[in-house]
Amino acid sequence: MDDRSFRNAMGQFVTGVTVITTNVGDETHGMTANAFLSVSLNPKLVLVSIGEKAKMLQKIKDAGHYAVNFLAEDQQEISMLFAGQIKDGRSVDFEWLNGMPVIPGAIGRVTCQVVNEYVVGDHTLFVGEVTGIELNDGAPLIYFQGKYHELASMNENETLRI
Image (cartoon, rainbow, N blue to C red; front, side):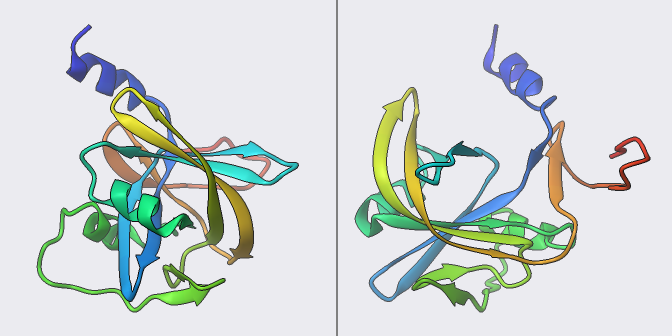
């Protein structure tokens, strides 16, 4: 199979949209990612996957910590900004949780201390022990078939539509 076929197949899996943030010294860094998952309840561990060419790779290695921000349905521009799709000099006024930069308005924010890293293929998997959680009301921004979507309904009696 070629790379495009593989990407198209993976695009059939609906994911949430996150922005991974960290700080090195006085500088805050972030990147959009959908490769995030919960690993363990005891201890509380999560994982993010960062490509070998991403600038964020070395930032997380240097910092030893990261935050995962679960974007709300009205935060597509934030996602695009941290994905490098918007390059007009916009900036984000970060909030702080456990000494780490987090995205205002995100529906979930999780801070983590890196406990393991694994090089797998062309990515590094960073396993982080959760050091803090903050939840906010709202619906998630989701990604499917290479496009952003919003949930049409979260009513338990209705079929989920995107």
